[in-house]
Length: 410
Image (cartoon, rainbow, N blue to C red; front, top):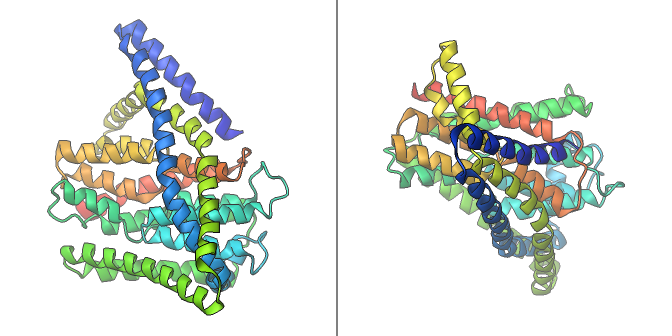
């Protein structure tokens, strides 16, 4: 229901802003811009789904091998002490546990292309336990929050964009992003545990969350001692080495179990193709609404107003120029990425505002995209309280990214 109101609001606000620009500014071009954006966004939605088709076919094919080879189940048992607390509605040993683990691990390594197919597989497994097929379960919402908060240890893509923009040290945003994304994920988990009445004082849950905090601090300490050039090299190597290791583990397990891996891969790949087709309407719906909202100039109205308000309060306003990245982040990954790149081109890659923008960009995932793709892949239309809690994690990540940038760069 919340998503329904938000979706309608995008169109209505776009129309109201367009009316205002025409009446008070004599701008008639805005109407053409809005409609052009609707057609462009619809085309982009299809292109995204088309681009996902090959990736989904590849990884769901590999996941099918890993599932029948027992690797996914093994990983599920390893992580079961934590996930059985966070997902109490999922039976122990259920295939969903292994798929969730694979998805979260890929997100941590910054491997978006691998994380999405694994996440869709996990959502399909969770849907198999769902008695009301059009309504999100508590487990689905917890899984969505883990993805929307976007815990990422190695933000490879952001480092790459900074390098392309001529940053002296493209990896200098690594630690601020790591802290911001951890805080966003931590807040998302804690608040959702409270909402779902999951016992936070459980010794196992406390030890896992505490251990995660120790790991984060250890990574911060390790990489802070490395030369900046080495950070990008080591982070990229670790991510891709582990990913290839997963593929090899799937294939070795398949050989050991003597399964027909080619036929198994084809079976999983067909599921990937069907999933890519299923998400197209959901992507069109959300991306068209966002595209028209942007084209109307509503985003500029919001950012200009906030900048004036912050200046009026007498607060340091260096970060305000990066605010469009934060506002666009839950709406459009490509949009927020474009704004980050535009800031680097305008102010320079090493400008403070460019670093703030990068920290915000890496703090969380694109919430509405994640929601549309994951829920859309299984036909869930009633998202319950997923949107406000995902937005809370997103806002927390953006604020943490701004503060972290001030700590490391001011």
